[in-house]
Image 1 (cartoon, rainbow, N blue to C red):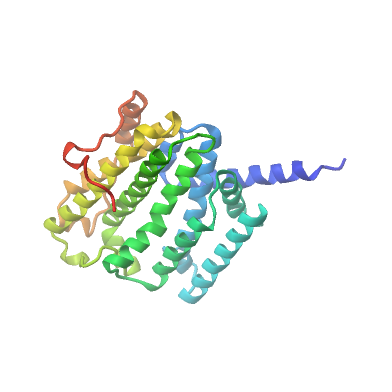
Image 2 (cartoon, rainbow, N blue to C red):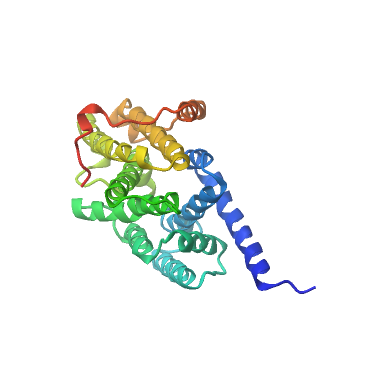
Length: 303
């Protein structure tokens, strides 16, 4: 019996989304745990976004290198992935299951090349830049992390009406939270990035000369980002508010552990939040504990 096209594309899309769900499940316990607090549709969108980000990230963060792919070929692969993503955003289909799932969600919630272009630009920077100025660092963090926060925000607000002022606060919050996540990861992976990839992301920071004073300065900047993002949490719809609160809380806990770790230890040790602590923090969020900006930071504004 013949199967109509809608049924075929629906089946293909379901398989694509199941593939993307496997990526977030295997790669990220923190995001995977937070996404479980979302309803099925929203969880699918976030998984689809995460999977494409991870796919591109693996081209520049070691998997391609381990496979024997040189920098020029990795750059060509990244170009091809972006071109495929752009086509899928236009037509709603890709032969790459992860790209197809991403485009399916992006087209539904209004994400387009205004966010994917800076993302792929930042990924290319990883192939050519090993250190950063203040300007290139801000550019890199925007494309690699802040735009991902904006993609998620688009999914969270699908079907919800908000005022211009509320949207602006949530946009600043989404960008700030994405930036905080990225900077925490930079600190956590400080030694590994320098030793395995030859990268030092923070401007004017020499990894093997990191001091507690410099570490504190970097963490204070992260705290300002987290405080900015906390201001947006009460404006989010209830479902995503819980999920984002958990992600916020998990990275806040990770930042606190890094703050308590001597700078010299960060050069050789990857700090993490124990699984049991993650589930305890999740329980707190489930009973309604929402992160608040520290009193001294509530009037600060994210640039």
